Each structure stands twice: as structure tokens, then as C-alpha cells.
Length: 267
Image (tube, rainbow, N blue to C red; front, side, top):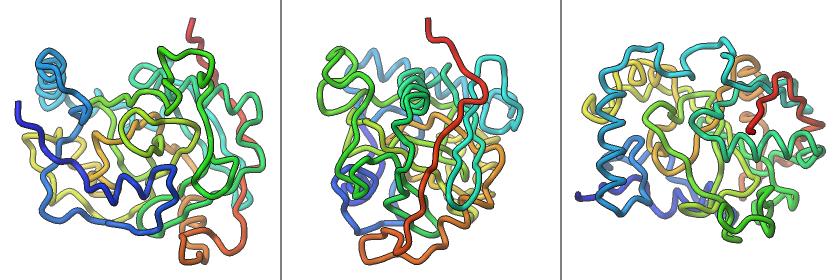
């Protein structure tokens, strides 16, 4: 099956660990692969993702957990306490178990305590999770412990036609496919994206949700594993701070700690 280019290499580098400062905010003219994995090469995997997408295209809004602010029994919840205020986020272990377990474990162990939002781009996203504070560091909970999950370059992407880079979506930053470590970003863009999206690749409920903003050009290339349910005003406040030429805030915006309000057992 012919693959569709999702986003440019410049965009991948931007959200990755390399610390690149260039940005393609809108990928004009690109076709969207939606939730089909860009890493998939086998016909069996391609067929399964196609089948999942076709099922999602027929689903109503209740099938998409990001569209509800209620924290379901199979979801977790955390609060990011930042120097600009608190952000409450629900997490989706059903669809992104690796990313959620990684994030929850790091949160409980205090890994994120005191870290900065090292890359902030208004009308796009805010990024954190790097102990180095410059986009070059961070590792998963499995690095050096379980090579079947983390090869040393990061753990696998988890994409699904039920989670998208909507405004307020929490996603893993990466330096390319299957390079997830500890860095994450929250989609902040407020601009209506719905007119760009073909209903053959995006469920109508998601197209409607993209009217509130988000970054659909990132769908399929990054693991979405959570959604802000309160505190988007804080996300917007962080996105509007002054930054330097590398998109780093000129005055540090920090995470004091992340509390786990509702845990999830992976056993």
C-alpha cells in the first residue's frame, strides 16, 4: 500500500530531541495520514490499521476519549503544577500504555520536578520533560533495562485512530519514529483546523473537535496519550511568554511537580 508523507523532516526535528529552532507551523498541501503508523511496512500491519480507521470513521463522538472531560474507569489523571498555574490532564492507557506508564512512573519518582518548558511556540505547542533543559536529553523508564521496549534510542510510537493532536492533547516528543524518551508537549494552537481535513481520513467527530484548534499535521507521527481537562488558560499563558531565537522562554517556566490524582495498574 502506498504510504502518504505525513509531515516534513523539519517538523519532526522541531519536536524531537535535537533542539532545532526552525518551524513549519502549517504543512500546506500535504496529505494527512491520520492515525496510520508512519513506521508500518508490513501488509498485515497496514491492513489492521486500515480496518481500525474504517471502524473509527463510522463511530460517534462517544468513541473518542479526548472529547469527554470525564475521567473514565480505564483512564488515569495527573496535575502538572507549574510556575504559571496548574494543568489537569487525563491519560489513556488503553490506547497508549507505554507512554502512560512511562509518564506516570516518571511523575511518581519526581523525574519532572523542577524541569522547565524549554521550547514554547505560541499558536503551536509547549514542550517540557528534558532534564538538560535544551531539548537534547531525557530517557524512558526502560532505557538500559528492557531492550524489547526501548532499544536505547527510545520506545515505540503508539498511534490509533481514536486519539489526535487536538488543542489540549498531551503527546510524546520524539526525534523520529520510535524514539520516545521523557519529553512531551501539549498542543496549544487555537486556530480552526477543520477545513483542512478529509472525511475519508478523519472521523467527523474529530473534524468537529479540530474547530477548536490543534495540530492535525502531527497525527500519526507522535504518540498522543492524554488530554487537558482543565487549565488550558495556563497552557495559553505559558505559550505567550517571551522567548529567544531558540523558542526558549527568556524567563524560566517550571514544573514544580506532577501529582497523580488517579493511578492506573498495568499488571
